[in-house]
Length: 169
Image (cartoon, rainbow, N blue to C red; front, side):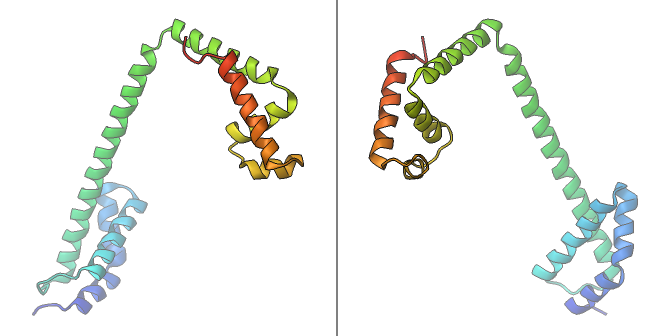
């Protein structure tokens, strides 16, 4: 006797806890088991089997076990990929030498010195607009000046930076 979709859903509801326990025993994780059974439930609701199922509980056990294996493989693959990416980052981090780090630090200090040497209003506008990403009209409202004045302060600050600081030497 073949099962209808309704019979399969009834079997799923009736045996839900048994299916979760079946997967939990195999994979030793209650949350993982519940997620797997939930995935199978969603799959059956979204795409019911084409053929009638003669033994619903056997079908559900096989479907949940297959889904659990698929999820574990996917997690394992993701984990291996992430570990390989971490290894690549670690390898490149070790490639940096002290001279390069020192040069970067010196250029950063030079940039900060130029920014600090800007007139107060120019520095304030530059930091708000370029570093904090604040729109010019918001800066104008906050400082009580026109948008045109904000643009002028910003342009002067950029010109000073271009003249006094060379990012690559």
